[in-house]
Amino acid sequence: MKKFFLLMLAVLMIATPAVFAQNKVNLVFTSVSVPGDAHTQAMFVFKDEVEKLSGGQIHVDVYHSGQLFTQQAEQDAIRKGTVDMVYTSAQWLAEFIPYLSMFGAAYTFQSYDQMTKTFNGPIGQKIFEEVAAKTGIRPLTAYYLGTRQLNLTAKVGPVTKPEQMKNVKLRVPNSPTWIAMGKALGANPTPMAFNEVYMGLKTGAVDGQDNPLPTDKNAKFYEVTKYIVLTNHVVDSTWPSMNEKKWKSLTKEQQGWVLAAANKAREFCDKTNLDNEKNILDFFRSEGIVVIENPDRAAFAAYAKNSYLTESKDISKAWDLNLYDEIQKIK
Image (cartoon, rainbow, N blue to C red; front, side):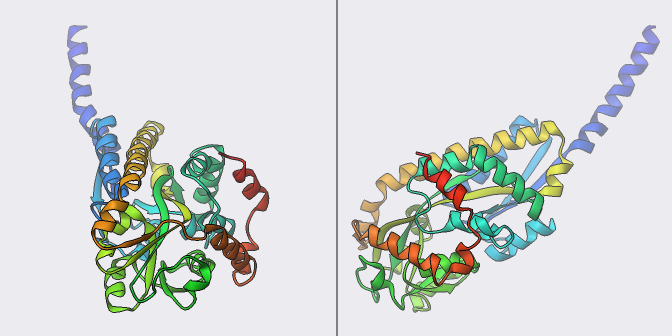
């Protein structure tokens, strides 16, 4: 009996490393975001947490600042399985699930609470399952990216109404939903890769861009612009997502670790961006930026609604208006 026990113990000692190695998972997580962005930092929170929870069974390689792909290319790469994880969003996925464009539309959400309760609750879970089934990309959760504001060069001048945005070349990502948003703000939307925006603003290739304030700071757009207009036009989110085949290759336990780590990173990202937005305007003013705090938001919202229903009706015709109304009840 003793010999048998010793023999079995030896077999287990040999087999256990092999089983562990077989279950070992490597994830490549890439983003175009820059080091100071909260969602870039959240990538490392995710990495540390999932590696800790899994006891090293899951390892994450993080690449940021467009080290591997452009913003457009990484969206293609995750669908093909060339990369395991990226940040995506409703705006990018609307090409495949058209009604999602309403989540990237100006003035769909009025607050952070409304946005996060939508995407990180039952509605969001249903949407994420649909995205996984139809696109091969599985959103894990929704991080608060920040509230998007207009950021304009000196050439444009102070803006308080959408009519003043006529002919302003506003940089937008190259997707139909983003282009529609540029039109909804009264501008001439000009597609441009994120890593080209700083030079585009400097040279006059574009006259402005829109991003959350922490991104404006971290990407140093304040160095080449003059105005920030607090339009609050999009309460924006970004979705850490995994290639669906990769997701299905994980065990249930591994999937649980990944979700837990993504939610811890979400808590970090959301708090960081909310805190930064409270304190960041003084920084911009100290850098010579003119902050227009009270533009006519009602006029911008009305203009946006009309724009979506007329010049971008090819976008809005796909909206789920019953779902839209349901979301408006969330506070």
